[in-house]
Length: 193
Length: 193
DNA sequence: CGTCGAATTGATGTCATTCAACTACAGTGG
DNA sequence: CCACTGTAGTTGAATGACATCAATTCGACG
Image 1 (cartoon, rainbow over the protein chains, first blue to last red):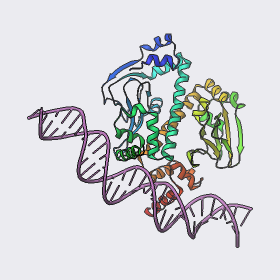
Image 2: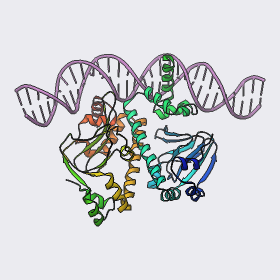
Image 3: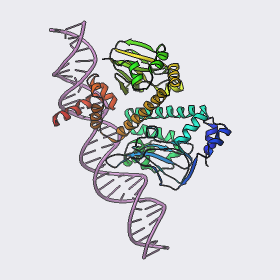
Image 4: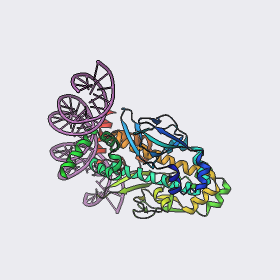
């Protein structure tokens, strides 16, 4: 099942069909195999990535060489390091594909043009930005205030389709725990049930 | 020492003197004693708060009744729950004063008018928004990937003036640890030095 | 001086990490 | 078709980091 970017823009972002025509040729579409890196630490993030089909991941690697996944992006999601995109400063993050994926690649001229052309799009873009902040704040709250088990349950609830598509150690990475710990947590949960 | 909002707008946000005059009467200034609550959970956050003098704090309270401080805002800082402000949905956070403070209160009409009047202001507002996201992402990275001791050192480095102005247990709350743990961390650091 | 909240200290508990061993399974080359 | 290899996942034992609870101590302020 794929979710075309056109459909997304017109349904969710309030872009009209005629507006879309003007934007259409600025959209680069790419089909990628698993494991392709779209953004590396040190590069400026020049693109929004919209996922039509497949699964991306947004993560960092700390000094000790450990990956920390900040976000999974399945179908219909946008991924971008906004801090880098808007400031033109090098990113501290990586983006890559976890599955063979079909994506739409949007650059700054596209975003600017769409924002000018469609106030609705600008609003929508702002809204998902606010949403993003809200997610980040919630995540901080959970990291500070809840146990790994609670965070896992919350993750499963919110991303149940993702759970079955990624290896368990990546979920551990997202939760901020080791794969071993997650394995044990799952075991105790299974016994309770 | 106070840092007037006018100075801030003209120096940092690129608003001209004549533009400021048009905006001036939309700015509400308030002087508050310590402990005044500016935003409570459940309310929509209708204002940006700029701190001319004093110190604000942005925090949540979890189900167990524990406070988690997301942000301190000393002079020259802006505080707002953007997720609530832009979506008009109830906030999950509190904002209050930690010291007697003088603040500028900005409502949506002000932000809209300033954005229209001054593209520079719009840009600036966007930039601090990106910055905010960057901070949140960094904080998540630290919560996931570093020890409480490292987080404390990082906090002291970045907010050294704040450190001396707030009780230690609030710093612990910001770091996501107990006051006791912070006390011990400080002790071991003092012995090393 | 007495009081009250903040900070420290000690004893103990809990949760998650680390390191190591082992199982399960998929992919590769003989 | 089977051994070989590598990766994911599980399990155990030991360790470490931080929490909890309780008892003092410290310090500001009435």
